[in-house]
Image (tube, rainbow, N blue to C red; front, side):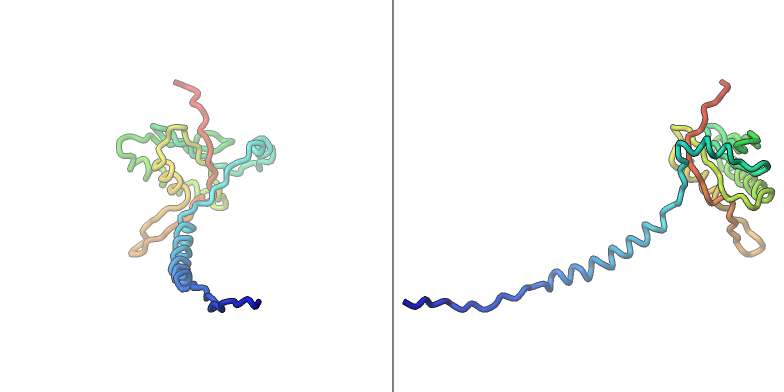
Length: 168
């Protein structure tokens, strides 16, 4: 007895909807990837064992700038030389921010080859204060005539915890 098989037409794979999805999705993902990359700040976090080794290899006379962000003041200093200036933060903090920027510009004029700084913050520091301090360390904007000039100060920033206060 002969077995008869029905000949079914070959099914074609329908991928038109998938291709439409890819055509829309790929440019969207590429555009968001570019925007998220622009918002990244490169920070160098110190290694735990690197602190002792770093102190042994310090060149004499080289500035190691530290900005300690306290609740009531900015403390700008040199890791080896000590405190340079303490700027009180009262009220809005606009005067303190401009005084900090002016001090950092003076330090950069004195040490133009230094590009690194450490930002040390207390544990309960608001995020906005931390970002403003980082912006003040990285660059400044000044007006020269009709032009606005952006000057780079200390773009390589390391972040850490502020040391405990010694006094009351």
